[in-house]
Amino acid sequence: MRFILDIFTVVLLSAGAFFFLAGTVGLLRFPDTLTRLHALTKADNLGLGLVAIGLLPRTGGLYAAKLIGVWLLVLVASSAVSQLIGRAARRGTLQK
Amino acid sequence: MTIASALYIGLAVLVLALASWTIFAQDDYAAIVGFVTYGLLLSLVWVSLSSHDIALTEAAIGGGVTGVLLLGAGARLRGAREPTGLERPGIARRVSAAALCTLISVGLALTVLILPEPAPTLAPSATANLAATQMGNPVSAVLLAYRALDTLLESAVLPLALIGVWSLASDRFWGGRPGLQYRADREGVLAFLAQLLSPFGVLMGIYMVWIGADHPGGKFQGGTILAAMWILTRMAGITDTPPISRRWLRIVLITGPAVFLAIGLAGFAIPGTFLAYPAGFAKPIILIIEAAMTPSIAATLALLLAGPPERKPNG
Image (cartoon, rainbow over all chains, first blue to last red; front, side, top):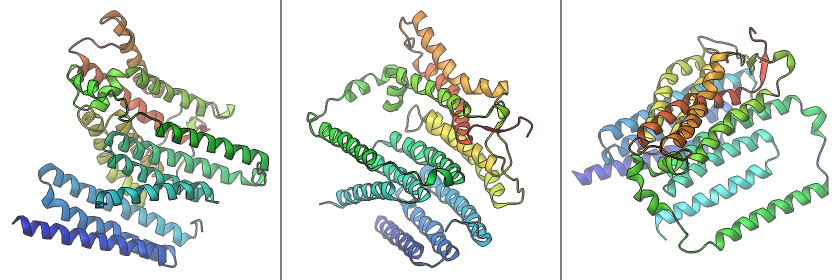
């Protein structure tokens, strides 16, 4: 059982790290604000979510709930901020 | 070399590189973003040194509050860029500034190198007397029991700084509302975020003050979160800054330092010296100080960020 949980953690953390890496590469390589936002949301939503779920077997009870809470709060904040940046970009008020 | 030490070396290199990038950035907006990121990385450094209290403070105050302050200052400078933009300090002044900075850095580095090994520490006696303070977190015990005078002075600095900011107001707006008015968009994303997030933020701020007695946390970190929630609702147009002439506002601002000072003076009467707590009552007294200080810190930080009054009281 312990072994299976370890495999679970390793696989999910690696997948999360992959999404962070892909998001960062996209942020650096994509041509304009909207596509960069598109890349960044993958790191925030999927990357952090996979890392949080991957760490769940390592903790328990209240700490597990806190981990999930951190993920949900970051989801709310990052999606709202992405919307704001996207709107500013469409209106053309972003500083180049 | 273990994986952990490779990670720490990478972190140190990243912090140094980001610090130099922040100094050499041409655009002030880019420099501020670099500074905020630097603060967040520095809090990771503190975590890796197991100084979780300092890490929290660095992330909240060093990265968060200072970053927002600098962004506001940068935006104001941008408006007034034309007349001052062409002025550049002369070569002599720049060379002497660089020389002075290098001298201070070298002096600090030399001081670190000549520190005795192992460094003198008060940590054993601090933990040995922890039971007398009835606290579980030695950092809080240092801040509020052993070295309470430092914390008292720190809390006295906050109202002074706010008075300094307010004194920049023009006569016309004295007693008015600080900062610009944000356009309210009740259906907007920001209003949604402010309404959804602020209850959690307030809960988290209070939790952080409460947990500070036994775990990393405390009134400064908690107060910063409370201030951030106020700023968020203000930017969404849901709340507005009160006119600075309001009596209740001024009472909130000075209650914390006043209670702290009163408890310090009461120390003369009961245990015998300034800021001494009667034996057995340290924990409740510290809790009273924390509870009184938190609203004052939150209000002061939020008003510091709002800036000097710029609108009439009814504007």
